[in-house]
Length: 253
Image 1: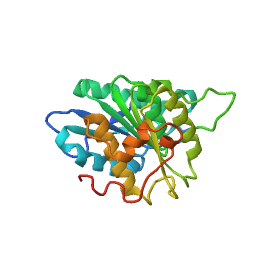
Image 2: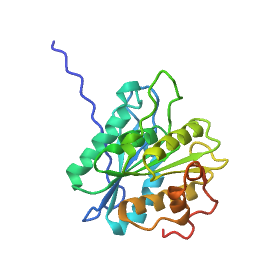
Image 3: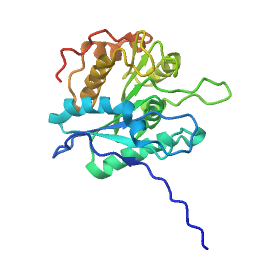
Image 4: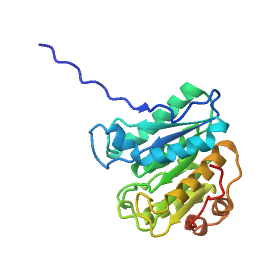
């Protein structure tokens, strides 16, 4: 009996969150977390849970501007070393946006390992901004090349990290931001004091900060003063900007 070929796994975009606008003017691609090494297929519900709340917030905020928000469904749970599977899937998703919607600006917004994927794939020609929440980054190794940053030139970049994160070291994201800032002045990083990896304690403030950044990067809205100051400040000031309690309460919902 002839053996059946193993199906080739493909990444895909989830359905647009909310009602898709008639005219699309910008796209956010949500990149969920993952594992360092795994060839297993992600569970659709569990894999997207960490980013759907943010996606709903951005969908509401950008409805009148023609924003579409999609979750990227990976082929594999793992980054998988030099395969960088989740970064490859993020780049594929940006290509798919161009195919579907044409020449519109894209923001890659990732959580955990998805934050690393967003940073890696930020050089895609359609991408104008990158949002990385609690990004998973590898420990620095003198025998291995550092995480790349040159692809972020010309993009606006926001990294957000809790100071009590026990899963992903916030000092690693600070060091990456420091290197990126040398090549690209439009990089900033906010610290959420006493918050952990999932950023639960100050979720409203984190979502408000993300909304402010994404709407400004994609549609030219004015940034809130703390974001403006963080982008303009030299390191380390703009890379250790504290996220104030109550940030965003006056933002439009």
